[in-house]
Image (cartoon, rainbow, N blue to C red; front, side, top):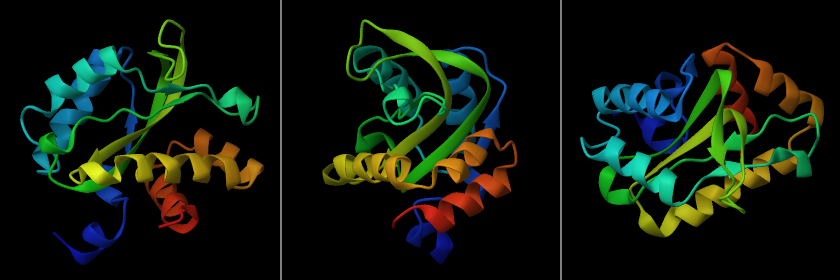
Length: 164
């Protein structure tokens, strides 16, 4: 691993644009890529899918701004991952996720911040950092970020604007 991979919560090789049309397809696609990079363990996919069913991670962004797309912040226990990263995933087609606040409610999500955290104590901290980023970043800049389909642009924006 390079030092930048260890220092930053983001890696240029772990930013994805996905054309998946279901949670299962999306999670399978991304988990395979993360496994190939040794960011996660083989049991990651099954645990991620089960955890999302039990504890949905969709976040209704309309409370922050009606202009923002809804996001999801999927994650699983640290024992299934090898690194501490946030994996940004832009969806070309929105996918329904359950609401983190009210799991009976579902809504379309267009962007994911998948948390990989091999430090169980740090899970809430990373979640708080993501929410802080979403609520304090310049409105127009964040709108442009959510619309970007360029993985390098997504990485550069996060690397510059996300509080480490």
